[in-house]
Image (cartoon, rainbow, N blue to C red; front, side):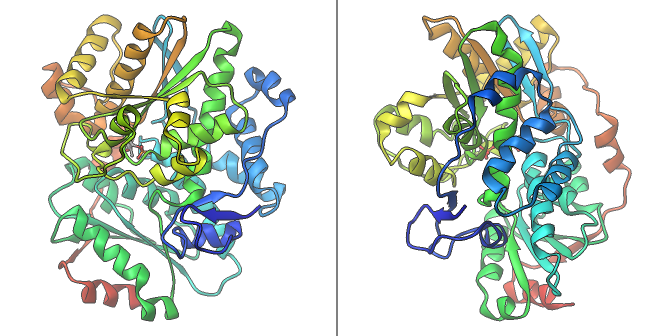
Length: 433
Ligand SMILES: *Cc1c(COP(=O)(O)O)cnc(C)c1O
């Protein structure tokens, strides 16, 4: 299978090229040239299949020409060595808990899959692969966890000094080995600019194998379709339409769901649930897409003003707003509404929503209350609430427990390299070894 750029100006690429390059040469995002349909027998068996079996079938449909089964099967099993439970929160509303991986955010799924594919595609290369990632918090730690101690790969994380939470900083800086965490004197935008400059630098590219681990990589997108099948399978026998509400920032998670639907999963509707950064809900309402600077909210991983995966959604729907509207409903929620949902769900059902999951829960709830046909709402719970301890405690007025997996980080030694906001300094570090 070939991968084509959403800008249509770059040559079709093989998977290896798309994964190792990240972004296409024309600045577009890679999409599979065609989306494989899965057979009816797969959907009939879905409720009996494990997450790993589903993931292998879906991954094979895309990758079987590029990665042999005897490599792909153990790869998928290792990536998903944790469960993604579907928990009933209240009647007809379920939480799909995507936070049981090593860094306790859904980005573990995509980052772990990508890291193993990159390792596979570079195993016969003599040079180390240098992976650069700019992060405002969650992405860097998921990428570090995915690549830690993977042979032949060196990871460079750029994070803004003083602008990530103390726990997030621990999750970025305590790995050691092949992970270098750089604390940049600047903002997240500066980190992103430095990363882009490095990836585009001719001299660095001549001497080193460089790539980006940001969410534009197709190897992060494909695995984000697996769990939609898994959740759907568990609800299938209730015979009601299923809607998925996805807390969205760059829209990679939701686009994973659209891939699942394009492969034949009969999802009734997707809900694009956002915070105040509502360019996609606005587009669905008005037909006008106007990206702008992001505003800060308590669901900070969704503070994106120009969602990168919009280009992929547009490619799936040939740029037609009517097609978008047939599949996706957009809702936006304020921080006040998000906090209210956290409080109400905790008081009524004893379930702790994190701020991102609370936006998605609110989306599912609103859709069901406005819908004339009875349906089941599944919201994607993308991070463990303890990752946002300060917001949670302020909202609930009580202390929340920190799981052992997060506490482990708190006790570890930080190794961070201070970096001035200067490309020359970064280049010197990348040029070593
Ligand atoms: C990244 C992230 C999101 C947003 O996902 P996108 O794929 O960018 O839309 C939502 N919640 C959490 C906790 C995240 O880390």
